[in-house]
Image 1: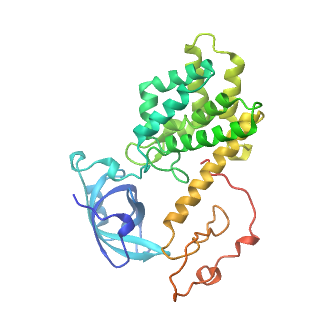
Image 2 (image 1 turned 135 degrees about the horizontal axis):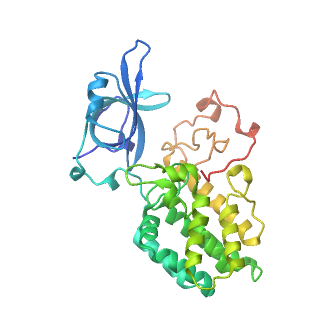
Image 3 (image 1 turned 45 degrees about the horizontal axis):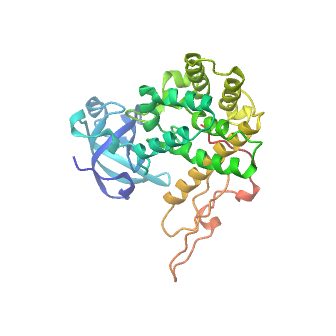
Amino acid sequence: MKKTCIKNIKEKEHVAGAFLVTKKEMGLSKSGKPYINMRIMDSTGELEARVWEDAEELGKNFRKDDVAAVKGFAVAYQGGLQVNISSVTALSDTEYSIRDFLPASAKDPVKMMAELDRIISGMKDERLKGLLTAIFKDPDIRSRFEVAPAAKAMHHSYLSGLLEHVLSICGLAEKIADHYGRRINKDLLLSGAILHDIGKIYELSYRRSFDYTDEGRLIGHITIGVEMIDEKVRALKDFPKDLSVLLKHMILSHHGQLEFGSPKRPKTIEAIILSYLDDMDAKVSTVQSLIEASAEGSSWTPYQRLFERYIYTGGVKPPGESVKTESEENKDEDDDDDKSGSLSLFR
């Protein structure tokens, strides 16, 4: 079924296409009339949607995480868009490919996995190389690692985002290790970079939509990752305990601060470097996404509460067009220079 891309939907336009239903909640209007609160998604974005008429009847036609044929009308809603839906019916699995409805890395996952294999095979420490080889020869781990997002939202929140994030940190780690020299254990730093988020392959669900698994909510990716390393280390002959402890410390501390979810703060030079590289890559990726999603011709993103500031996009208006100031575009916002605080994108 041909579908309208979310990113191309404009106000006061009719909408007709297939979308992934990422939220479905029944509600009652102020008049007591039932309605459906929804979100619809494809690989280009996500939008709020509502069913106002015949909500109980239409609600029988689909469930959350279904791909559904939708008809509706786009209206302005709280500074954005909302689709008022008049028709919605779930499609059968044979009528679509789920990859058409989830955002995905622009990079080829097969080539990225080959690059990961190259990094592992190039390690001089045979003990770490053997551990990583054993981990990524596991078919379940390998297949999940190739497609998993790095997060439900925030940074690298798309298919193969975890793999892209890991390779980005590995590239930075190689440069940092070469820059600072012999006091850095390069192979240990690369191993931590590769494994720091490996628990996310089980923390997150990403077969139909991005969400947390029960295991993810109850235990979290840091604990899952340490358990995965322990399991593989036990299967190897004579893997040094002290090396296992140093590697697990990097997993346990890579969020940097206790308030950001790290059970331990980084206390080795490799763990300290990893925590900074992970934070930097997450933030740079998020800012890049904000710039790419910013309005054409605008020099600034809308005020970002996550960063507590506006982000300059570098955009320039064509000659003769006026440029609104920040105060004109954001009359209800305080100046970001008055804001302060810390943030983490690890979640």
